[in-house]
Amino acid sequence: MGSSGSIGSIVKDVCAPYIKPDGPGFAIAVIRDGEVVFAEGYGLASLEFGVPITPETRFDIASTSKQFTAAGIALLEQDGKLSAGDDIRDYMPELARHYPKITVGQLVHHTSGVRDYIALAGMAGRYIENLSPEDEVVELLARQRGLDFEPGSRFSYSNSGYLLMARLVRLVSGVTFREFLHARIFGPLGMDSTFARDDYREVVHRRATGYTPGPDGGMVVDNPWIDVVGDGAVQTTVGDLALWDRQFYGSTLPDGDDLIRRLLVRGRLNDGTELGYAYGLMLDERGGRRTVHHGGSWGGFRSQFLRFPDDRLTVIVLANCPSTDPNAVAHGVAERVLGLSGPGSGGAGGRAERPEAPDLADKVGWYRDAEGTTFLELLVSDEGPGVRLLGDVLPLEPAGSPKDGQQRFGIGGFGLDAALTVRADGSLHVEVHHMLDATLRQVEGSAVPDPGLAGTYYSDELDAVYRITVDERGVRLRRGWREPEELTPTGEGFYVSGLLVLEHSGPDITVKDPRAVGLRFTRRD
Image (tube, rainbow, N blue to C red):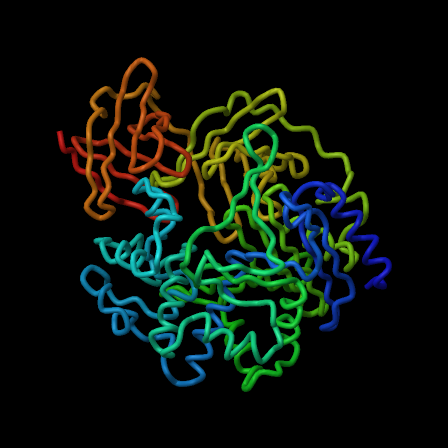
């Protein structure tokens, strides 16, 4: 591996497309053999005051926080105060009315089937900022009459599971989640800039502001305004995370080596299938090398914590705007340091020529999975092929030449972890790492809206009203406090708006999201 000087050159080359001195930016640290060999900040932590990002800048690391929530559960397991096989209803009886047995371990490994509270809030037409404190979220979960699937039968990433885990830590330990993590992890390790933020009003020194590109080409503030913890909300720096990373090569915490072993235990489904998700950590392989990682996305914040354990190399990237892709940066830097790629091999800083995109004009249209939960629209424009997926329009980048009648594409905007394959039989296969793995077939039938859809509908699981109009302007939906939105008919009785999928069959409608399916709204008029 290269020297610190050569690592600095690699970082500069890989990160060049993302460095905007007068815009939001990111902090990066490269750690080798437990020591920080490079750390730097680029861009501004505050556009309003022109404060630069440094390695000491605090960021909200979003879902990268999940490893600390899982560590809290693992510590309680060590203490003998709970076990992975415990039924969560024994600790939270408010969930017992409609839920079957769900184990603590199923929450940890995202196999519980509990609907995602962020998806439920959106489906109800509520802004997530208005779903606080924690008790209100749990009340929403307790209203659900079912799960997305039988516990243990599938993997489906769920923020609800980790929110409930933080609640378990509080109920079992007798102290707040924030206090527990400080006493058992952050304090002993000297992670003095790290804490679980459980009050969004709190003044946090050296904190980066989150931003999102605005409609006029500028930036708008996009900070998380919510008090719930567990699925995210840890505030930290790249330097503090380096202290945590060091524990994976010989922990200084009491019984720390046992803790680290627990965190690396993969989940299993009921049928014995082993998962790539451990305790808040994703276990994978890249270029023939093992990786341990987790990213995050919340408000304007993006993060990636990427470790190559056999090479004792870690890259941490924390950003305060979606225009930086920490996943691409972390992988790009690590692969260059390890010699897996070179300056002209593509990636965040690569300049290799890409294969010419094949003609997909005859395949344009809507596609869906067998369950009618995941929808994708294949698009072709002057800029090339693209997809409308999970609420966004994203570019497709050919990944090599066609083989056996199949063409594989990388999906821009998801970094290195998303791909689409156009198969010889006309179907599509889409993969978004640890989020989505589905085969889609083109939707048949007319995409003309059904006038009979117009009406008012109610869901008691969400305590929400949908008002739908159908006229010459199209189909419009009003849900909760949100502005009216367009529903796009795809055929076969399905309508799509962002992540929301609405199915109209008979007098009622069924509403779905990739992380919350099967909510029925009954007609009221």
